[in-house]
Length: 498
Ligand SMILES: NC(=O)C1=CN([C@@H]2O[C@H](COP(=O)(O)OP(=O)(O)OC[C@H]3O[C@@H](n4cnc5c(N)ncnc54)[C@H](O)[C@@H]3O)[C@@H](O)[C@H]2O)C=CC1
Ligand SMILES: O=C(O)/C=C/C=C(\O)C(=O)O
Image 1 (cartoon, rainbow, N blue to C red):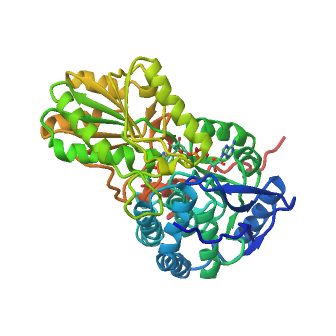
Image 2 (cartoon, protein in one colour):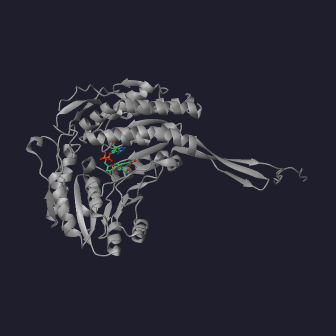
Image 3 (cartoon, rainbow, N blue to C red):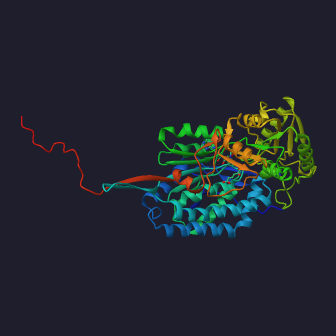
């Protein structure tokens, strides 16, 4: 498909699109062709500093945090409307930049608008305090206040949706922010800046600085005027961020990696389970934190289920991400492609059987990894323990509920789990026993934005979503009010005679 000419992407600081202080740029590469798409301003500590100053000033002196909730929500709704109006361009830019199939980026653009609408509603209805009465002597009540300047650091796997999933609650609760998008997918973050600019949001409330993790993300984390870091990305990066921010005492929300099991029991509705397992590993090109990358399958249905998986593999539409019929596109970057291919190679070396879908030769220039299943695997293998973040499904048989649970939990990650059974007691029992943040029982990952989103173990710290996100994005303050006469020890009241 023809590519529209894309101009240079600049930072968005204090309501203006600006070059880097250094004047430096980096190349943004198309994952379909590995040709450059455009140039992007490359930010360093001095650009971060300007953005933080703007956000700090907007928080301390601007109208943003003190304006009425109704007035603030008008901006949030306006942003949602502008995302809806620009949805076609957003999904095009996202597919071009990330290789995600356009049928899927369309849905992501819809979800991004919902993120703003949802938080406008949530702040009005659920950003509420509590009160505690102590007989007739005290009434103690809590209020929620914005925290200050937030640093939002996001990955490339669902860039626009994940950026808005952080920006919406940050702004709706009255904070100001600096977004540092992933360097491999800058286009839709720039579109978000254009949309927010058009919404008329007061200057300095929202800023974007582009650049690499170590040279642009790290100074944002270490900046003393930034109080919150909301991060989505790899577990090792999350850990580096917490270390780097330690001296400036911040609060963190960490949405990290996953290696989520789908457990399919012999009594499950196998056709639906098959649809879900295939979708949950091959959607987003397998670059999905909640992917069911480990299939635990009851031994009695193993062969029949695997035969059907193989059939699906042959039929998956691997293609140009801009083609609406495409189901799986190229991976984000050559470096990531090589990493995923290395895991497939390791699987063979460790004795597993690797079965891959065909890829049309016309796509040789792109970062295409064939949708792949790994058979004869066990849970000790590298491909069962490490996050591959590509279209690769590791299949492991089990014989009892206890064994399934043991395998599911024998992994450092704990993001999601998927259970397929028609036995209601077994379903709930397994759901509650899996060590992870989110379980879907007889379902793919269908989101309810009111519920907590996040992982346990190496998959994260804290929860975003619903009112759970308010814990992170607001400061809870207690006000103690005395209602009757106080009996306070009267130190120093009596004159002491020597
Ligand atoms: N739990 C969740 O909700 C989700 C987790 N993810 C995880 O994200 C990962 C894939 O995304 P990637 O972009 O490869 O992650 P990454 O950790 O490499 O990068 C994420 C962001 O962090 C920045 N960064 C890198 N090093 C940094 C540093 N030292 N200081 C500050 N910022 C730094 C990058 O520039 C980028 O903006 C996977 O592990 C995936 O599981 C992705 C989506 C959702
Ligand atoms: O729904 C969300 O808030 C986040 C979703 C992220 C994924 O589904 C993913 O990367 O797997």
